[in-house]
Amino acid sequence: MNLILTVLQIVAPVGILAGVGFVWVKAGFEYRMEFVSRLAMTLATPCLIFTALMKTEIDRGALADLLFAAITAYALMTVVFWGLTRLLGLERRTYLSPLIFGNTGNLGLPLAMFAFGQAGLGYAVVIFAVAGIWGFTFGVWLVSQGGSPLRVLKEPLVAGTLLGALFLWQGWHTPVWLTNSLELIGQMAIPLMLITLGVAVARLTPGRLRQAIWLSLLRVALCLAIGVAVGQAFALEPVALAVLVLQVSTPVAVTTYMLASKYGADADAVAGMVIVSTVLSVVTLPLTLAFLI
Image: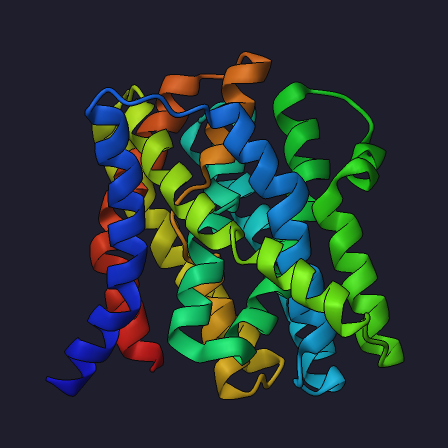
């Protein structure tokens, strides 16, 4: 019973805030997705990442181990899902990105924080950064069938990550007044991301639901297996291992739908995977947390 209550306390805030966004749109209220997403991704989230890295008390060696583990996990997922799309005859530019990239920001960061506290958030931002950099380079190149990978350098979250890593490495800290200001801005990120997730799901038009169901089930099983295998191979400490498994098994990222829509891939099929995997996560994420806690 205590385990059930613990898991409920972790997932309830996530579900409630995402539900607020979903109900808000269904009630007919205006929600300017582009403005809110830009505010979250260019201001609030970089501040959250920077301050989380700068203030983390996690051993640098543990963070480095997690960094290499995350890189390895995403490399393995890319290879495995590349082979899977070829085996199943799926269009790679439509299906590979949603198979690889989960909601490490909208869901992963708040879940890690609620489940494992500030240490969990510190670990989660490292994985979020790896996923973000790989998504903004390989992911965009894959869907758009071209483009320069160097565009990632223009992303504020990358700047926030690199700057935070530099401050962590050197042991630097910003003045208290600036730290407090950055933390206050960063505190907007998680509520904004969760509410926006609910709004995005409410606005999606799904396609090919039967295919989306079995693909989503296969995806979460493979991601969990890869996360556990890589974490054990790198001998990660328990919280780092738990956060890695949690992050790589989050449901399909909404951004993969946005990219598919922007670059002319099968956006409805991707929307189906986003919705199905998000609905399935109501069951899979609590079970994963129950196993990890």
